[in-house]
Amino acid sequence: MATYYYKQMKASMKPGNVILGGWSFGGLLALEVVNAITLDKNGGFKVIGVVLIDSGYPLVTNPKSTSLVETFRNSLKNSLPRHTPKTALTSMDRSAKKVAEWKLSRWPQGYDKPPTVLIRADKGLDIKYNLPLELGWEFCEHNVVDSVQIVPGNHFSIFEGGNIIYWKHY
Image 1 (spheres, helix red, strand yellow):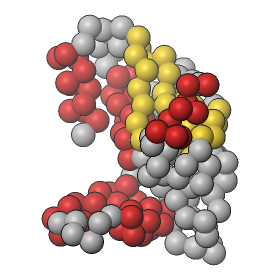
Image 2 (spheres, helix red, strand yellow; image 1 turned 180 degrees about the vertical axis):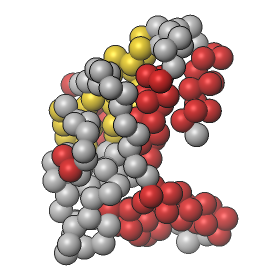
Image 3 (cartoon, helix red, strand yellow; image 1 turned 90 degrees about the vertical axis):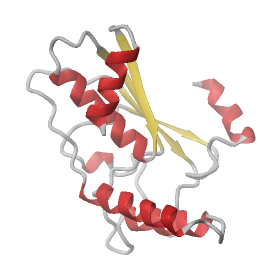
Image 4 (cartoon, helix red, strand yellow; image 1 turned 180 degrees about the horizontal axis):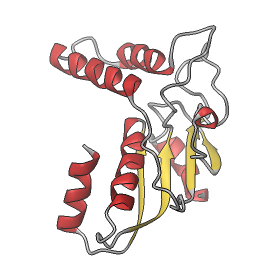
């Protein structure tokens, strides 16, 4: 998917500096697009920043709870309307399973990682699941997150009107 997104960028944008980002799974995808850009020496794009919006490192588990992916899956299912089509639920389940298997690509040797900010919802996904400030990124073998900004809301409400107003400070 990251390769496809990068091809679309090259087809629709002038080369130059870019800031990439994404919410939830989109943050993981943004990191993979960063990797695709860095591997393309002649692409003309340079990533000058990455914004992860409430994107947790999926391989972190809490011994007193389920995995982050399982917590997300349960929280998502509980927040959806009862009439959500079965095909949509199946698709979300498949995506969650893929995220559970995801491993961050290795940065090319000598590559300077772009500054990366994690915008984190203050309420998180699940009160019972007490994740560290960096949503598990501190356990990743790469030093991914440079700073964390906490915004009001939970994973699903951070873009709502009352919460999004707070973002103007960033």
